[in-house]
Structure formats: C-alpha cells, structure tokens
Length: 579
Image (tube, rainbow, N blue to C red; front, side, top):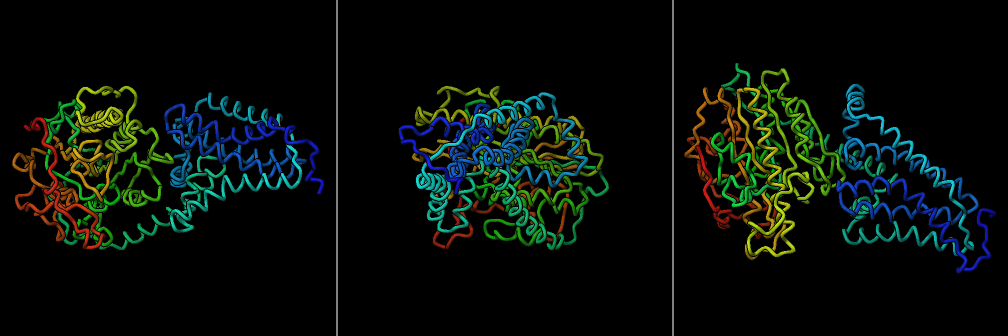
C-alpha cells in the first residue's frame, strides 16, 4: 500500500516538469534513432511520430508506483538502452532502420561472415557515439523524480495512457480490418518504430515469414525437374545476367522517345542494345507479376508457379551456379515470395533491410556484389540482380547528385503545379536507374564474358501520365497503359554474338507479355526441354502473337481478363534508334 503514496498537492501544483523528465527519458531511447533517420532523409516523419507516442506508455507504471520511480525507470531503461544500442548501431553502419529483415540476415550469416562485416564497417567513432548515447541516458535517469497523484487519479491516468496509446488503436484497427489478426498487424506497424517493440515485432514477424518461406521452399523442392533438358552450351563457360527493375514505365525513358533526357547512359549504348518496344507486364504489382515472369505461369494459368520449376531452378538444372543480388526489402509479408525465389539460388546478397519502402535505399549498392559474383570462379553462372528501381516514394530512390529535373520544363501542361515535384522526382529516379543499369552492363562487358544481359522491369508506373486519370502509382481495378508498359532490352557480348544469332531487328516490335519470359530466356540461353514453347519466345522464328492479357486472373468472370491492346499507350515523341 505504501507504493501508492497519496498527494496533498492540488492540480495547480502538479509536477509537470517531473512528468516531462520521465517522458523525455523513455522517449530518448527510441527518439534519437528516429530523429537521425528523419534528419538524414532516410525515411519520413511517421516513425518519429509513432516512437514519440509509444514512449508515453512507460509513464503508466511510474504513476502507479511513484515511490519506486528510480528503480522502475532503471529496469525499463536498461532494456530500452540495450535495444536502442542495437538499432542505433545498425543505423550507423547501414543508414537503415532495424527490421525483421535484419534478423533474417543475422541468422543466415555464419560467425566468419559476421566477423567480416564487423571488420569492414567498424569505426572507432562508433565507440564514442555509443558511450555518449549511454552517458546521456544515464544523465536523464539522474534527473528523474517521483510524480505523485492521489491513488484514484493515478489509476485513471495510467488507464487513460494505456488505452490511448495501445488499447484504442488496437480495437480501432481490429474493427477496421474485420479480424484480430489484421488489427494486430496494423497495430504492430504502429508500435514498431519504438524500442523494445522494434525487436519484439521484428522477431515475431521474422518467425512468421520464415515459416511461410520454408513451406514454399519445401513445396518447390518437390517440383519435378524439366523433362529432357538439353543445353546447346553445355561444354562452354557462360555468364548470363538477368536484371529485374521495379516500377519503371518505359514511356518515361528517353531511350523510348521521352523528350526529357532521362536515360543518357543507355542512350549512348543504344547501338549495342536490342531494345524491344512492345512488351507489357501482366500485373501491375511486383509479387503477382514475378510469379509469372520467373516461372511458367501466365494469366491463363496463374497457378503454374506452384507446380513447375522457376527460372533459377531451370538454370541450376542446366548446370549453372546461381546468384541472387537484391536491393528489395528482404523479409516482409509481401516479399516472402521474392525471398523464396532468392533462396533457390546458390548464393544470395540481401542489401535492403529497411522496415518500410519509404526509406532511402540506392540501387548503386548492387554494383559491388555484382562485380564480386562476376569474379566467381564458377565457369557457368547465372546472376540475378533485383533492383528497387523507381519504386515510390520516388525521392528516396536517387542521391542528391541526380536531382536534375526540378522545374516545369518538359512537364506536360496537364500536370498541376502541386504534382510537378512528384513528376520530377520520378524522372530523377529513372535517371538514376539509367546510371545503375548502364553501370551493370559496362561492368559486365569489362569481364569479356561469353553471355548476355537482359533487363526488364517488373511493372510500370503511372505518375500523372494518363489524360483523364488523376493517377499516381498503380491500380489494377482502374488500369492505364503506363502501369503496364515496361522496358525490355538485351546486351550480348562479342563472344556470344559469334556463336549465336543475335539479329533481332525484325522482332523488336512484337507484342509480348513478360509472363512468358522463361520461354524467351531458355531460347536465348540455348536450352530445350519438353515444356518449352517456342511460340512464346519473343526471339523465336516460331513466335506467335497472342492477346496481351492483363488483370487479376483470380477475379470472378464478371471481371474477366482484358486485352492490353484496348488501351493505347501514348505515342513516343521520337522513335527508338536501333542498330
């Protein structure tokens, strides 16, 4: 009973300063990292705001037990401090926010790899920063003092804090989503920026996504190999590269006739490239698109990805050592399928462990591991590079040095003034994507390989491109052409051209869906097997034009698939120049 010390002070004499010190102490361990994330433009304001709100929950036990203020604050503070050291250290090294992806990478790495990372990224200034962080936390603890309220008022205040910070949001999200599981997921998103919830939520989600991924991998391991696979290149060394972009609409690339010079480096390489100008994606979403692009599934047979080998599995069966380098988020509920594809490869490099997509993450990070994979001694290699590309929020996709487009020059008249910054940031993202893709091509060419590199985007993006549509991003329910028009191009080495027919001048405008990529890839790679359908190969003499189907194949017949040709993309200003 003595823990609940009654106060004889009036409301006028309430110790607001004491309460402020308590809040500042608890906020400090989450707030400093979130403040650094905000000030460095790594992410937006949401995480900072959520950490601020969640810090208030720790006031409840101190209001209930004021006589134990210093002890309780110390116990809670030690836990918060330990978690904050982990999240702060991770930010120091990677300029990213801690997430379940980090836990996945930690458990995927061995002791030797962990030691290499520590040696590579450790800097002595970090020790000083950690000591300063600890010293400030201790100093704040010395400033704490009990805040007394009459017992009844203390109970009411504590209950209000817990209900406002945790109870009400959880109930609200549960009602909004229609299920407790859905509500809990939304609530976890709310509390995740604050320690220690950051670690707890990350670990729980890691376990959940790991279980899902392992289930998918187990199912994939039972898929029968391709029948009667033959490789025309079986006795020759070869390095093949597949670069998968993200959210890039070819209509915003100068290589495809866009008036702004958004692809100057690829423009310089155009005489060396086979640029296909009539390729579309079947779905405007990454997971749904790649389930078809990387497998034998398509709009009419969407479930074939569950029962047939993937492109990576196909190349492994052909004797290639496979690499997967990705700048996509590693372990999220949406990206479990992508991680499953990557885990089918022999080696993986995961570069993006941010908690959310709205965070600064540059695709230039893929270049170093790409060159390392090129230098691998395996005679036959497949290297898949998955970019973050021009995914929104576009301002996070490029460094400041690529902030080239800043005014209305070159912006269509129909784009409102308030839309211009977003329109420009997308073009800047395309400009940086041009630098990354062209760098991959150049670095690949320097190795004098025997092989080819193919680049395509998973889907497009409508950034105020369609007249009559005030559209940003993608909406399959209200499709527009820019959501589906994707870049599709290939570069072949001189060695490969010597032994392969690489004259595709008559094929560049063929109507094609990337859902049939695996047939084109196998054809280019010199593979043959019973499941191969050369009429679905973009570069085959047996190619057969088909309706370019788009839409959700799992919808009811009332929302049937539609032919993309019914939606006319805007004509390019100039034609793409081909060799």
